[in-house]
Image (cartoon, rainbow, N blue to C red; front, side, top):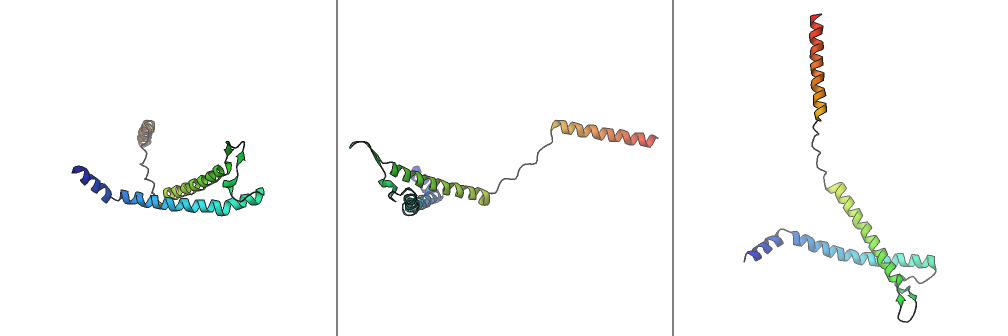
Length: 134
């Protein structure tokens, strides 16, 4: 029974809901990236290469049993690069504008600096005493 209570607490904390929203948005974003690659980038590549505008149809046939579909691989690489770049930009934006950097703790002076400060004070006191005695 305790496990059900723990699970209920976990679900009610919102972590599961946040994760679900992230998965749904990620799935929708994957569809958008695939559409961008298929409908915009592939025709541009086809325009410059003079070949088919569909990268997935590009292949190297060595024999009937050995076919390298390098176009599908290039299509997946382009999809990955676009997705990775957008995620990079989102993380960079979140860290820059939404996550406040923690204030740095004031640095303590080193032992040498403290010692030099004490020596300076002693010398100033000696100079004052010598000035008064003159």
